[in-house]
Image (cartoon, rainbow, N blue to C red; front, side, top):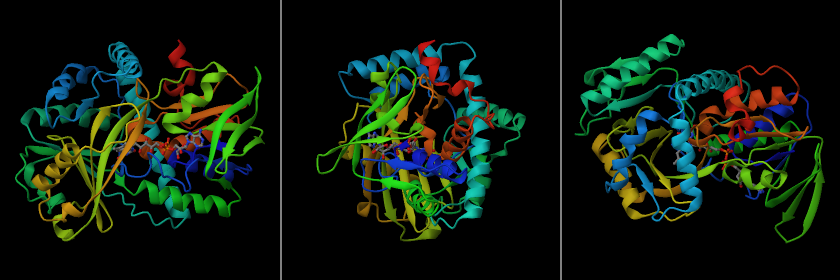
Length: 420
Ligand SMILES: Cc1cc2nc3c(=O)[nH]c(=O)nc-3n(C[C@H](O)[C@H](O)[C@H](O)COP(=O)(O)OP(=O)(O)OC[C@H]3O[C@@H](n4cnc5c(N)ncnc54)[C@H](O)[C@@H]3O)c2cc1C
């Protein structure tokens, strides 16, 4: 039984079905990939993945809180949950050596995820505007370019392709980038890609159904029914208000930001906090003026991504609990970045807006593994990189469930780490 049909739940169901398990997926939405997996930045950024608790960001990020278009926002006064999350973040950020260890672990999972995506795309015709055409992080200052050198060296050491580009080389790679935003070069992540996570989730859910997976939509899982050793069943509420109990041999929680609520009654604290972000999606008027792949504008911290004949642009890291408002100022900043890099590519006044919540852990790595009940597993808390890491983390949780050695060391992702 898989709780959650976001990209993480659907990929998990797929891997389990492929291994011969009988799988049921439960979700309160009426279709797959319809929550955080719906309108994200669409990057499959295997070479970029990094932990949230970054010691280098602690003092750098603080001034952003006070700049009108700064990428970091916090609802004032912050809630007790936001304060607790930020305090835990600081503790992890200042744990010597932890950032580097976690980053390497996430990069290893990224490499595996890419392999799994390539295999999936070979085996099934999924139609999700997916590409692997690389990813650019622009340098709008000379200092940013300096910083990219260390990243390039780490990736070289790990055998992950990246290149430092001059401004002229950037224009060769992204000829539509004719705007007047400052440019001192870029780092290109050669192996990275893009794709519409929502379309992918729906298409893979269809494949899952062909493999025998049963999807139950519009059901709210209210609680896990468990004793001290096992989970016996889930209690769910159907959309007509009825209560149902469903039994299974094993349970995988892939419920994103809502995972903690399900396991808390079993004595487990999952400190996942919803980090809000925003996106716009708009049809392209002139594809030659649009990104070829995906471009991160380091000045406004906005990502512009090509999805077939559409542009998706995304930004902001906001601590506002589960507030779903979309302030006009946030969307204006995202549009300003697009204008300054890809002017004329689309009529931005026609853009659809979206907001969603990254299921963030205070250190950064996702939570993948078995927990204190024999048949209860977690694949959740993927934060900023759940789309990128979905295919890989689904493959490794399926290995854990089948009692095999996971393809990637999972110690940094262990669920028990928050209680240690
Ligand atoms: C602005 C923004 C930009 C992003 N950009 C990128 C990017 O470029 N690349 C990348 O890799 N990642 C990106 N992410 C992160 C990525 O979108 C998430 O990590 C990923 O979508 C998480 O997937 P998930 O399946 O864990 O969660 P979700 O997609 O949220 O799915 C969880 C599902 O569980 C269901 N659920 C929860 N509780 C219950 C319950 N009790 N009963 C029934 N159903 C339940 C929910 O309805 C939901 O459908 C971005 C996120 C945001 C917000």
